[in-house]
Image (cartoon, rainbow, N blue to C red; front, side, top):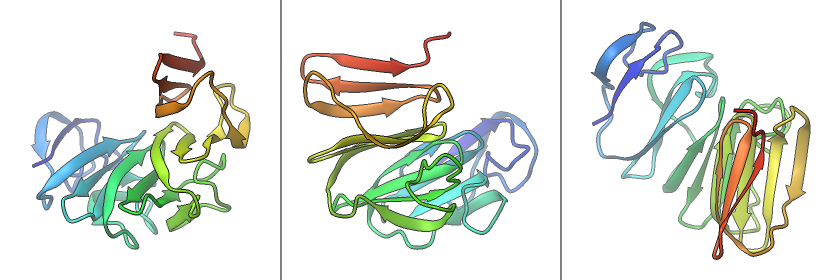
Length: 193
């Protein structure tokens, strides 16, 4: 079961309406949820059967606002899910990364906006990925790259990152990022707050 609360004016609570909720409100129609993630004004759930259901503003292909969960077409066998601000990615058991959504800063590695999930790095198995704001970082067997918008608002396009050691995991915020290595955690981006 999934419950949401807070601002709902753009459907991000999944309740079927565009109103706020001060208490947890059940999202109807979702069973066997194994992971849930939210972006700026959107939310997605990964179900046990590998399907992905999304709702809110700008994340459901062909719809500006989806106040109730909608199954994302073209996704089968997803095992991991991540959301940024109006863009999303999933990986499957074959470690293929598929992304969709708003692409104003190149954050889904496509041009123009990707209405349906499209493969990213199809030739390189993805070990980990993270989305934050208008950015995406991907850790594959041979690459650690980020694309989208940097912390200072400038577009970045497939920039390989070099750390003092091999990255094991990555996590993005809206304007900052972290990479985990065997010997420590590395951070970069805005430190204004």
